[in-house]
Length: 261
Image (cartoon, rainbow, N blue to C red; front, top):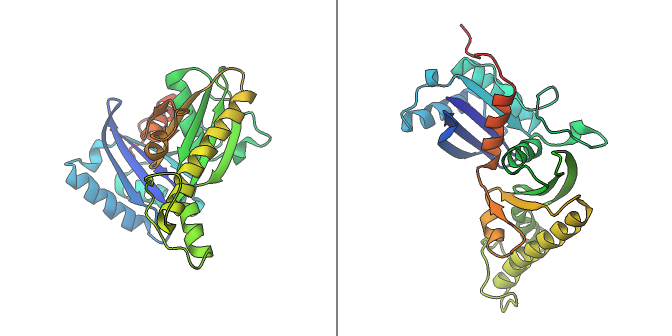
């Protein structure tokens, strides 16, 4: 089995693939203060619940956008799995030319999502990831990473309203009954959900004008389904896109058997 790990600012998502089939996947909070031992114990508990042995894992790949966490995850892999994981970054084969002023600036998760989407659809794409930040990544019909857009995430926007406006409450991220809010809670929910829907539609329209052909729009991330239900510009939702991309990159790089003797 291959263990794939995507470390984000808010959540860390893990998946176990067996013969290219996703056997298990888990989403846990990213805690900067946890040690490699604590993550090792957490992984042990997850494996035990799913009746998986550590010896069954023959390879591992990590995508990480939180620099302090990378050393922790690599240490956990070496100590508890006996593996030297492949880390998504400079030097890793992606098959996706990155046409940026500084290719090293692009986040590992954005590269992984783009690789996963293009390897499956093989056409011009906009990949939207609704995470801590909401990112829009554009891929040409020739499979080139062209760049994209970074916007504040839905949760960040909600928390900013609560923290910076003293009379506004913290509200649940739900679709309100109508756009025209008749109380404070519904007004805030409308501004976030419908305002975000308009942001997505507007950026997709503007980005589409700059691409070489009409793009397919793929959404991923924990909140993708919420927005996708409210707009017709999103063609497909794939909440496991990043995990699939990590497996694709692992196979593309043909690492040797990584288990240490």
